[in-house]
Length: 440
Image 1 (cartoon, rainbow, N blue to C red):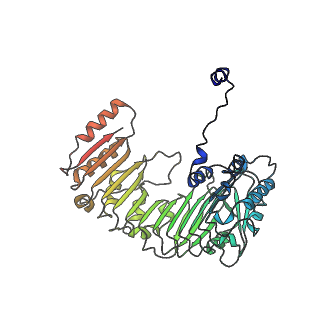
Image 2 (image 1 turned 120 degrees about the vertical axis):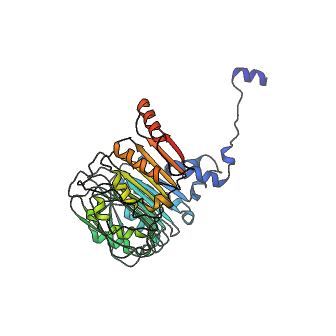
Image 3 (image 1 turned 90 degrees about the vertical axis):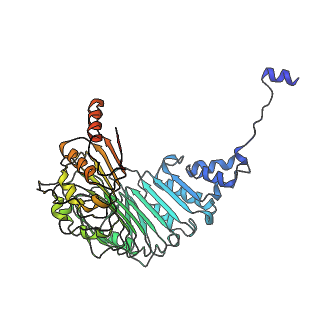
């Protein structure tokens, strides 16, 4: 009979529920990757699943995936209700992805019964239309922010801060990506409310006119300040930095002006792409670093002369352009006697680097770093121009301690590439142990 049922297709087939047998930790990891609305629906699967989403340490609220929500206020109400159902003391990370103008978002944080004070990380991003901004206020004495260690704000968000006593007592990392402040004063108030801040990451979009950023954080150890490409000629940020504990610095802003109020003797690594004519104090700040990344352009030698002597620098990475000059590279190497690793990146930007022709004489003697210390040499985007050939030949001919040299060609033409490989391999090498690798 069972065979007849099987042949007729009426036999009931049961499948083992393997996913429900997984440990809670693995289920938590799976559900933390999907929006809360989807995670909540799993509670209807069985008794085993009913409490699982309520124990998640990470909740992701995505307005695009929340059903039956016709307004921004509806999305906030959904967040409000679901957070009340969640086991609040277990929540550690809250991720909000906004789509519409959400002025009512403040109510989500201000309600004392919505979010427990054990929260460690909040991430809020907004992808609304450019002319709209989701306003987020941080009122004083808000318990939810007392334990917060990481705060990430991204997109079309207008940040408003109430001047008050410290409200981010535990905040260590602050990310501000393309958000808006009405004034430099509000930006300063936000930072002053973070007494133990260690990491500050700022990415700003174009904003017509000058804007003063005052970064005065004694505890700050890592600072990244980058600017998206702007089509506005007068978009020039003015940044004042007071960070005596800073260890890592990244600046990508070729039109902004940066002033350093105090010495930063603890700085060990820096990646700075700026116009040195507008940032004359920067070379002095960089004299203590061990790792450094810079733009290399002809007129920079004028701004570095007699002011950039770094005996601590061990690793140097340079972005070079079509106006590359070999004698400029040699002149710079004189100022870094202990250098052990040198890397050149040939960039092809869709913008012009402000510069003026500048005469640089060849060094009278071989730079000390080439004679005694350089061990690694890398070149990305080698095109085989006259100036590049001169630079490569000089380094290989004089680097006595060189162990590895890797040159990546930018040519896609196989015949031309083979000619460049033969030329590079035929160059004289001062080091008998140097391993030269040339590749497309």
